[in-house]
Length: 443
Image (tube, rainbow, N blue to C red; front, side, top):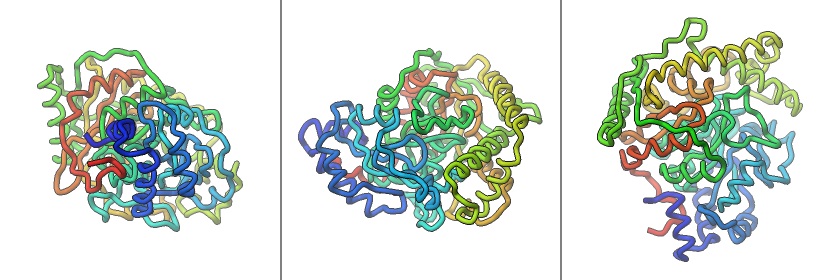
């Protein structure tokens, strides 16, 4: 298998040194610049490789994300030059990156994101768009699109990612990768970042294998909720036949392993007032954007029109309205948990159809409602897990017309470790023909 675990084994066996693996990643990163927001100087990155901690990923090059947990020595800008200019590079790692380093990973750069993460494509203003390695006219997803493009193009074997509205699972589905959105509170998000976004956000990695995701989770957290092999499959009408067929293929793999598969509802039985989780997420993101831009002193003139509109909407929300959002989240969580019925996991598509072409998520307009409706249409099944704080694993389930097709498995609260074990029948479901090998991994 070609993944981060295999690269770590090659380093441990002496088939390649950690320094040579880093040199290969640096060279590959310079061939795929649109996936990268920031890199350490070569000499600093190589020196870090020489001092990698012992651990399951010892010596494996790693990218942080330009949004989320902080990495010492790498200034975040959340995809915005204006935000980056108002901040300094952190001198200490966040709690999450302290654990990543202890696992042997070597962070040497940050992957690209859309400005403030507010899109399911990665096309920050003033920079080339991150492209899908399988088709450069299409998006690798967002907001962890740079991370997904970097892993799929072999810059690194594994990369940090975050998910507040599908931002791990959408890029995973776009690029043939594995990615777990952890349960609420499972992965550490402090002490400097701590932006839980009212509980909808969590962080972990994107990788080429289930075993890499398992190891990454074990290095930062463990959960002990047990799952029975019972799956409710949901095939929404909002998804095309390719997405539905890939999900059916995963169901057959579970059936072959002895799991019980039942048909879930075609869509969640949500009351009309709570029928769109994305509407809650939109308000949360707007409030966060207003607060963050105000705190960093970034003026409206330095951000795109769409972000100005989102900032204004966040500023206009009252304390009572924000409190109502927190109540609605808890009410919707209970309703979503009812969808499980007697099952312990939900199986469904991530995307509604093929990866959109570049340019689908422009920020050069002020129609915020249309922007969020477009995100919801692209990934209609992503936001349940964010609102309810559930673990959700995206995995490759097909390959059609030269493009990966993904699906997802959503577990009960705090069942993250068990969910990854539960997913073992999917580990070899499909062999994705990545267009580039992992940098530094011996053939």
